[in-house]
Length: 217
Ligand code: DX5
Ligand code: ZN
Image (cartoon, rainbow, N blue to C red; front, side):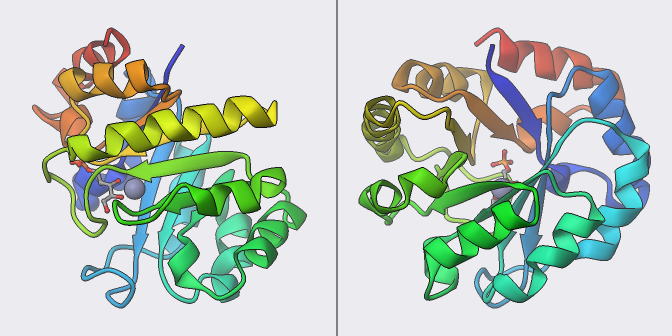
C-alpha cells in the first residue's frame, strides 16, 4: 500500500493543529513538513518550534523535508521537536554521509532528496546510510507547481538501485502529485507520495476523498 504524506505547506497555517488532525482522520499515513530557509530555496516556511507545537495534535509520523543550508546545526532540534523521518538535499552541505549518520544517531530515519537536476548516482554512494529517497518532481520552494514527467525515468532508475541493494528503502515523490501523476509514479516504482495541493484542496470536508483518490491511483 502506497504511503500518502500530505504536505502541511498547503494547509491553513493559522489552523495548523486542526489541519493536521483532520488529515490524520482522513487517512493520511504521514505528515510531510516542508522546511524552507529563504536561502537554499526562495521561500521561508517554518522551524522546529512549530513542528514541536504540532506534534501533540497527531500520532502519524512526521516526514520532515529540510530545504535549508546548512542543515546539520538544526538536525537535533528537529528530532527533538518530533521528526521521525528527516531528509536532506546533497547540495545543502559538504558531507552528505556525515549528515545521514547524524540523523540516524539521533534516532530518526534518514532520507536523501534529489532535485530535478540531481543524479540518482549520489544515492548509490551512501545507500547503506539511507532509509528513504525523495525524488523532487518540481523545483523545490513552492507548492502548486506542475509535475515534471522527466523525473519518471529517475524514479525507475532509483527503483533498480534500491532493489539491487536489497535494503528496505522508501522511494517517495514530491511535487505536483495528483491522482493522475500518482499512478505514473507508482508504476515507475514509488512507494510513498507527498501531496500538497491535491490533498488539501476543497477544505477539511474533502480531505478523506482526496486521500482516497490518491490511494486509489
Ligand atoms: C516543494 C515541497 C512540496 C510541496 C508539494 O518544495 O517540497 O512538498 O509542498 O506541493 P504540491 O503537491 O502542491 O506540488
Ligand atoms: Zn517536500
